Amino acid sequence: MARYTDAVCRLCRREGQKLFLKGDRCYTEKCAIERRAYAPGQHGQGRTKNSEYGLQLREKQKAKRYYGILENQFHTYFEIAAKKKGQTGENLLSLLESRLDNTVYRLGFAMSRPEARQLVRHGHFTVNGHKTDIPSFLVKPGMVIALKETSKSIEKIKSSIEANSFRQPPKWLDFDRNNLVAKVVGVPTKEDIDLPIEEHLIVEFYSK
Image 1 (tube, rainbow, N blue to C red):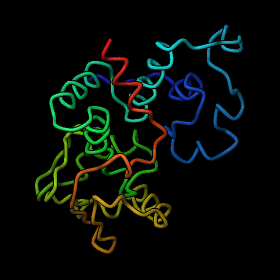
Image 2: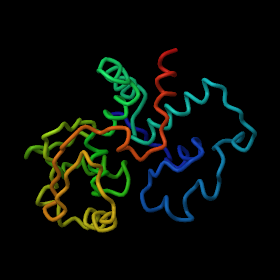
Image 3: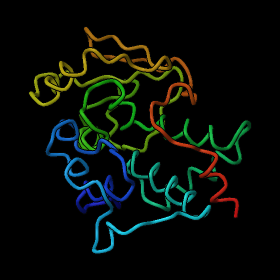
């Protein structure tokens, strides 16, 4: 499965804001954008003025990078969203939020989405009682996501759960913290998404 393997801090610097791709490090002074708040490359410190197309492109790139998705898969999500009833932009965000790796992150099992993706790939979670190791798996209302019993003693997962104990999961997830089991009770809406994404710019980009 294709994925981005270069330095993720470059992505934050390119978008000009924190994408929170490295967990704890993003909250410290070691964060690259805290030290070099300009785009990477030899022309990164030059003055830039985005065109309308440039703004749309940057918004699409930002959304892709938040969720750790490459172009082909992201475009596939857009096509699915465009065929569904309702507003395409909101449908797109709902699909992205419904990914299993994002769900695991939103439940507090990981400090970042890349970390959540890795946990899913390593088979630490079940969906409806079946081991599911596909990060792009889309969860739906009625499904039950649980941390495997054998994974509950893993120190990294335990520390993430403790660190995220103050975070409330979105309303479309009913999370039993005692048993580390969550049930999908609804569909993600725009109000549930805590990312600064202007989805209408993405729709405009693909509509050209």
